[in-house]
Length: 397
Image 1 (spheres, rainbow, N blue to C red):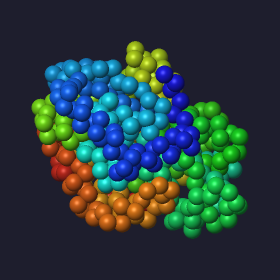
Image 2 (image 1 turned 180 degrees about the vertical axis):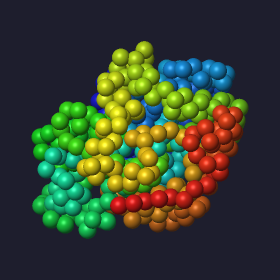
Image 3 (image 1 turned 120 degrees about the vertical axis):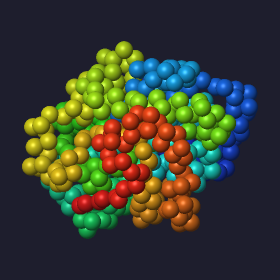
């Protein structure tokens, strides 16, 4: 299967259609038929080849699902978010990682009966720009690429732009004013080449494509998203409600495996890079060990460089370039819904107006299984967190 995550206009239109109640209906009918015909389906994982999928892939690689008594098939790599969503809604796969805003769109825009059961990772994204860009305000009058409108990347980028006096716009034609930044959706794999050819002035995306931009000479990191929104989630674990309600023991085993994988990754970052790489036993991604290591185990000189250049402006946070902890804090979901209401989105967004952030935080998320899994693993302290399931969100420009 082609490992490119290319996003064509057709793919975008397809994804937009899937995330409407009418567009999702045929797929939901297929999901219902599949659930009835195969009530004890094996675990089927769908993923894109980005670090956001790490927990699912390492849980498979290390046999943690089998340890929990789960029959699991080899994870299926797909080329686009549209393919992943279609496969999930129709029931072809029953465990996926999705951009957090995408789960909000799915549950409330297209009425998909699914819930967030855990976080996949924290941070793990950045804003990469051409060498001529030295500060956010320099992006005025330029074009910046995002992976999708419903992404934490788009939310954080627009927060940065507005805070620096710039207006996010989406212009297919016409000149972008000096106080505007034109946003375009682009495949992660296409972003570094577009930066080199000056078609864009920057891009914000998940790793390892920021690391790839650096190592290829395409550009430099202007800011890490985790340095703007402390310990933010990017991709989360999404599962069907019929599995959560009708197969609770099975669902618990799935989440147990993911939590165990996250704990293992925190303690084995270099080995994680090897296992996820194109040279790993399962060749989960097309990425080199070197680029994945730059994300998972960056050296101290890299960090000092980022502090000096301003890519890291909150060094006291001691943020990892990517980190792992599974608990879906309600305060994060609430803040995300509030920020989405202020974010330019070139897709169906009317449903956002009626969403109550506190209601979404409790309705979108089912934390029963992850809490049990965390306690089995030794508690939140094992993940470097205080022993409480609440926190306050911190954003800094």
